[in-house]
Image (cartoon, rainbow, N blue to C red; front, side, top):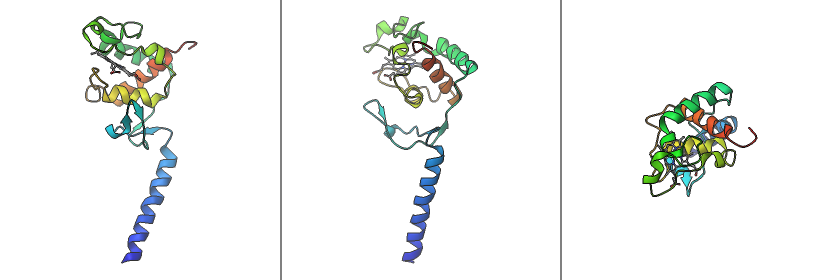
Length: 142
Ligand code: HEC
């Protein structure tokens, strides 16, 4: 009896390690417990990163115009028309581009932050990756 429990635990640990190793680079866990003080912790599991190609960036730009520009501004610098009615300034995404890894943006947009609503129910994973790709493409020198 005892032996089989240990065997079961051993198998679980083994499976855990293997799957984590395989997917660590591309899959992210979106549970709230993963965000503390704006930083992201914990092993990734749920969504697969999308390639950053021009068509993704373009789609991201379109979603940005429709959903985000009102607060973050035309140039994504945090000065959109609605930003004046907020207590916190919307982030200057142009400045933050490439300062954080992709999954940081993905999770912040998905889960929302402070006065920014969460977008996970309105936008698909693809939209969120397209937005992430768009934001990252705004970095200087890109
Ligand atoms: C209602 C206004 C509003 C809208 C609409 C909005 N945001 Fe925000 N956003 C904010 C505010 C305010 C913050 C700063 C929150 C804080 O730090 O407390 C923020 C923060 C962020 C951050 C976190 C940056 C960081 O790492 O510090 C990202 C990324 C972001 N917004 C992207 C987006 C995207 C993409 C959209 C469109 C899907 C969007 N936002 C729509 C107001 C908005």
